[in-house]
Image (cartoon, rainbow, N blue to C red):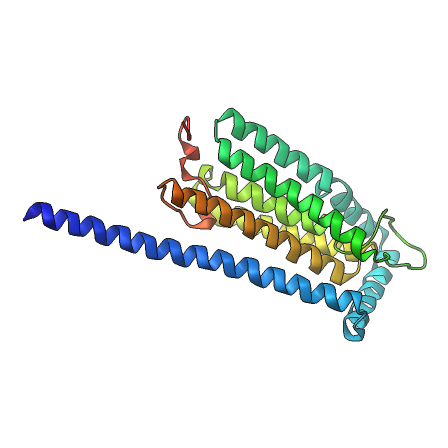
Length: 255
């Protein structure tokens, strides 16, 4: 009888775990779908030159540009953040270092997820830019310049994928009390990147929004794939905010 009770308890736990995993997996799929649909809709409006969106872009660019021209110290700070701290090369270098460290820790699959997410984000962004071929804002007395096409913002997309990769990979190593703080810093940085690009006059607001949505779509899809692998491997699943691979805290997380 005790054995039957134990078996029943174990089955109930597995069922509850399966239900929780199914709900989380569905949530990841919903996030990816919403982000993809949102980006597709935005792309349609941008290509179709929807007037309300165009007015919003022009209004935001004009007001922020006026402030940037008249406040050069503020503009210099924005350029420092955009061109150095939050520059795509800086963020990608951070992800490369993370990937190499994960390989050193023998966290092979997490390292592959990190590399694939970052590379996919960059390639998809370049592909969309080359297809849409949207011109950047042309403002009088520009305070900054940027090469290439405008939609979507490469800075915004790279910030979205890079900070997501860094947080999802390293969260298990952070004290629980600091995880929320670090997530807030990451989200604020992503939003800050978008603001600097519009304020410096090198992107329209819709470019930045497109970068955020496209980056979120890439992260959601690759994370969904990683979680599916964990389920197939019989590994438990932690809340996404706590990181993708709780075993990273071990000396050798993967055999």
